[in-house]
Length: 306
Image (tube, rainbow, N blue to C red; front, side, top):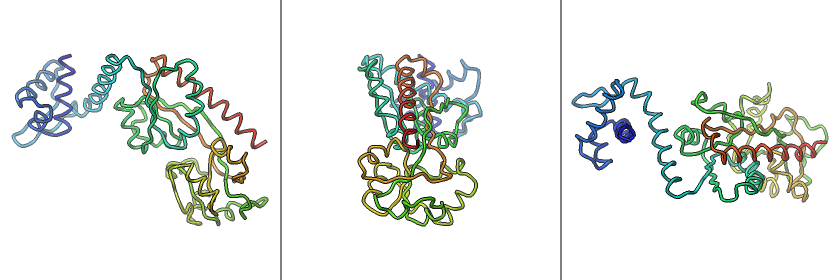
């Protein structure tokens, strides 16, 4: 427990680059914070900071410890909260496409076996989400595989592909794009709206696709919400690209037309987590629920293409 308290002091000093500022934030005396860090250095046999009269500079050991310190402190807070309250909570962060595709059916399946476990899902940009995962403030990440592959710290978390389905172009009924054998170049002549973070799909683009998008200045709009994209396609001349499973209700109702676009990469949904979280039976159960839900989604989506 003493080491954990000292690590809290270390984290504040590192972040603020000052013992006095850390002491002020922690509401402790300067000497208490200084002595706490010194005792940690003595017990661990290493120097964490180089101190001068004007600066506090982390050593290489201090730099290695800092991200680990964030993880330890976050894990401690989670353990304390769950021990005191008795509640179990699984926290998810992802993109809107990922959450919209997999979350509803996964929760329905999960509730059958764990009806009292809370689930909190939030939307964050990938660069923020990965920090939340590394610091153990969230349990799972759900993003496209290309997005997960582009994230930093890839050697510190596990990634599993759980769903693969086709993207389709969606548009209002009667749209002029709905002609047989239309070429990619001709299709890109219409105004498009793309969901999600388009820049993360570059690695999946087949030869020539990125050049064709640049040449046509597509998409005209890039909006994070797939629902907003579909609403725009229903009520205007904008064409969007949506995973089949999300568009299926609108296709069945006749509110949207659709067609396959040659060369468009498939939507590949990935799950990321720290390896130890799967030791929690509730987390593993939820992961299993997502995998089962994904199988059903893939089966239903493939039916549209047959």
